[in-house]
Image (cartoon, rainbow, N blue to C red; front, side, top):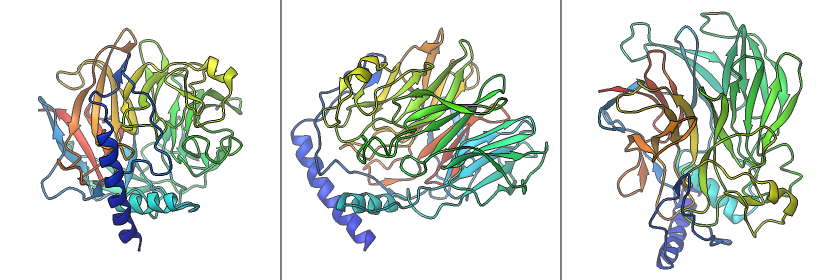
Length: 431
C-alpha cells in the first residue's frame, strides 16, 4: 500500500510542479554572499514534493569527479552510512543510522513517509558505528568491525583523550576508549540529553583545546508546526562543558544545523543549516555561516536576516536581533556535511569548506546531490562554489544512485564522503 500511495503522491506532485512551473520558477540559484532570493510563494496544503527513487550504484559505477580528481570506493556494502570520524591511528569510523517512522497525523505525513521509503530515507536504523581500516594503504579498507552497537540513531562522533563521545538522537554518550581498540563493549555514560525525533541528527565538534563539545540540534518541525513548546531547546547549537559539566545554548534560531567545523585562521565556528520548506524553489536558501556566541539566526520567525515568514506567529523583538548568514547555498540543497579543506589537499582547490549536499525534495527542479567546495580568503567565503563530486542523480531526476552526507579528511590526506543511498564511503584524491 505504501508503494502504491507513493506513486499516487508522485503523480499529484507532478501536477503541482507543472502548475508551479507555469507560474514561473527561478532561473538563478540563490548562492553566495548576496543571493537573489525570490519573493516567497507559500505552497499551502500541497507542497512541492519531488524525490527520486533510490537506485544505488551499478557495478563499476561511481560519482563523477571534477577535472584533476579521481574517486574510488573506500568501503562499500554499508547500511546507510551518514557520518565519518577518523581516529588518530588512521582507523575510519562510520555512523550508520536511519530516520525511523514517526507518528502519522495527516494525509501529508503519510505521503511524506511513503515517499521517504521509496527514497531509502526511512526504515529500520542500523544503530551502529563501524570501524574501517586500510592497513595496506591502497585506498580501500580491507578490515571492518562493529565498533559500537545498540546505539540510538548515532551520528556525530568525537574522541578526546581516553573518552569517545557519540551523538545519539536523544543524548550525547561518553564511552571509555583504549588507543588502537577496534571495538568498544563498555557501557556509555549519558552527559547530555536532547529531545529525539524531527530533525534527529546530533553532530559533534570538539573545541580546539578539548574542553568543550559543540552539538547541533535541529528543530522538531518545519516552522514550529506543533507549537513552540515542542521546539523548546531545539534549533540550536549547544556548548557542553566537559571539565566543569553543564551545557548552554551557544546559538539559536538555526532550523537544522548539521555539519560543524572550525575555520583555523580565525578560530571561528561555522555550520551549514537546512532552511524551511514550502515557500518556493529558492526561498529561502540553505546556508553556510559563522556562528556567533549568543547569536539568533531567525528560525522560525524570519529567514536570511530579517525577512519575515508570514506563516508563523511573530516575535518582533527576536526578529530585530536576527543575524544574516554569511553564504547562501541554494534552495533546499540539504547541505549536511561540512569540513575544512586546507590549501593543497586536492589539486586545483585552495583553502575553504567542503559541503556534502544530500539533495532536495521540496522544489520543482532538484538541487544538491553533489559535494561542493566554497573557497575562503581571510576567514570568509570568497567565491562561487565548485563541484568536487557530482553524478549522484540520474539525468532525468527520477532516480538517485547515491546521496552524499558527511565529509572529512582521510588519514592519507584524501577526502572521504559518506553516501547513504549508495551505502558507500567514497575516497577523493588527485587524478
